[in-house]
Image 1 (cartoon, rainbow, N blue to C red):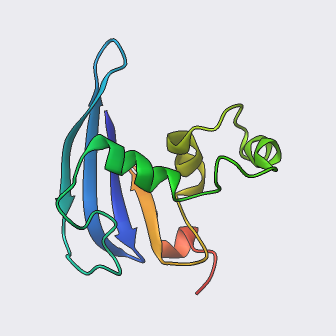
Image 2 (cartoon, rainbow, N blue to C red):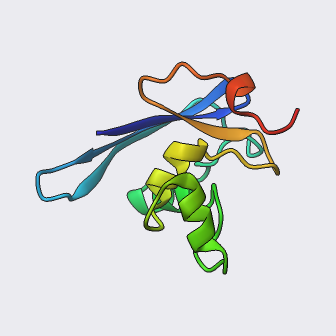
Image 3 (cartoon, one colour):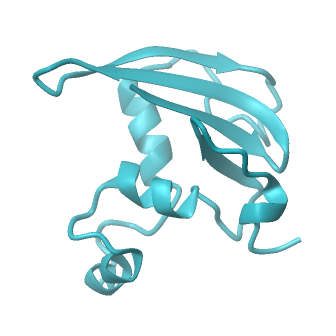
Amino acid sequence: MYNFSVLWKNELVADVSISEDETGFKTLNYIRRYTEDVGKQPFGGIRLDLARVYEFLEGRWFERARPDVPEQLQYLGLTEYNPWEIVKKTHGVMFEDFIWVRFEGEALTWEDVKIRD
């Protein structure tokens, strides 16, 4: 199971649940949205599928085509570009907004992960 919450600062804006079978096939169980505010909700609109979740995760860190990807991955302790693993390490925090990801079992707050006020 891959379960995580998306927050805007300390406001819960979405919960996501993905399951994986024994072959590695992943299925989106649900995306629960708690706000329709377009500035806070990364899963607005009608299209709510696994590709949308993957695009969201991939967009929460550096682009795959950056020339310094090997150095960035090394810094994070990773050997391959994997958006899920990258966001697990960084919580998807970016300088441009206040959206971030908290994984199941974590008790983190915005104050724990923020890189700016």
